[in-house]
Length: 153
Image 1 (cartoon, rainbow, N blue to C red):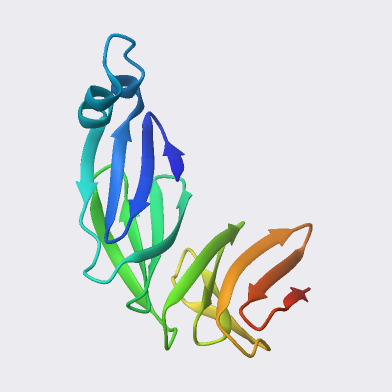
Image 2: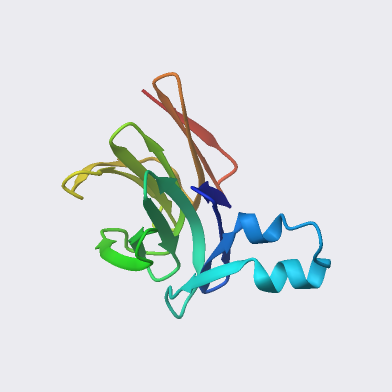
């Protein structure tokens, strides 16, 4: 989940949803009413499912099992572009500065330029699906189903 302005963004299967936090916070509503009235709008996603997402400014980047990374404009609720470079499911995403980082079942990690949406580099080394990516103090940590965590400078 992520917060954008007064909205909570959530992912469930094939749906990306935005929830109006002001409506959810109304104290005179039951839990069921809060759930229904709080829904702001649904963003169509894809037929195969979203596996992770990252909010950067007014954009949401959603990674999915159809090998794509989609950029959604949260102001208009429209998909602005679809990026494809992985050869298998994209499972995880994070961001450092102007670089989007994605991990995939193709056993690679890709670093993307957020301005031009080009792949800057592809990191190889895992022998199974990359399931997590995390950046901290100039290093990138990636975890995979091969039971390893790799550290990249």
